[in-house]
Length: 318
Ligand code: SF4
Ligand SMILES: [Zn+2]
Image 1 (cartoon, helix red, strand yellow):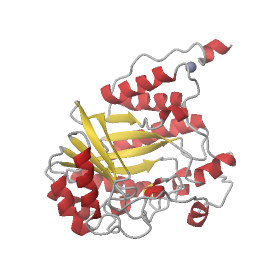
Image 2: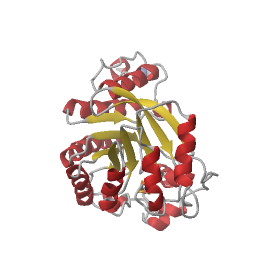
Image 3: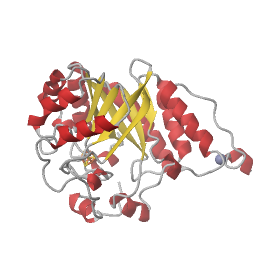
Image 4: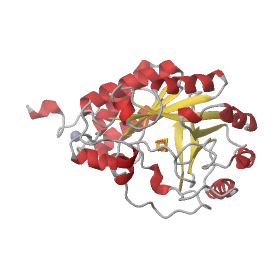
């Protein structure tokens, strides 16, 4: 595949701007939102974006480094962040402990803090953490054993495009992803995954097609749930690629198309990531209806009637 730059870790790092100021004593963001559960109900899920050391991987599309510490996470900081967040947030039944990296990276989450973390999340039915395929091993099972609730691990698949996947600098292979999912599922841990729409280096139409293929691959590996992430600029690398014509921004219609495809397949839950969705709108007339339609897809896992628009439907522009 032709790329405008020699893409390696040095190039990715050279594109970066400054980090945001963060504190080891506070999660940098928290929220509670409804989510369709594996059992088919809709229940509140708390998401804690924990502040910890920077991820040692340097994926091309990643912007999570922006809210990380420069050194290792101090022992005790993560339990303190979780305790403070839980005091302030409204009640929820499930919790995502997202840490801008990998939960089983010992520099990010000191292993001696895992029992205290497990104790803090005892009230939750599901505990969802992010992890890399190469860090997926006995450590996950030990943590699962400390929990009262169900452990679910989120692993980024991004794309199964054979030429694009290696360019993402994830330092693993699709076989590693499959192995990690099988290891977790065979040991009673649920898995969700993230899929990019579109990955860099593909036009949007191809990006839609490869997101659909990635959903099929993920479910074939045994994941329980796919989240479709509209790919965002802002991390430096994707901005440079966009400028060079090697990255196409997604739009809301493409997100509807891929989410619809995944739900119709019927192999597991498929969610559209709705964060900052308006930034992907191409028509203000129909955006509210499309956003509401995507939210219904997420919560009901069914396909509402398509949105018709007098302004942007191709049929009205003949
Ligand atoms: S493994 Fe995750 S957090 Fe680390 S660089 Fe890749 S996408 Fe970012
Ligand atoms: Zn429209």
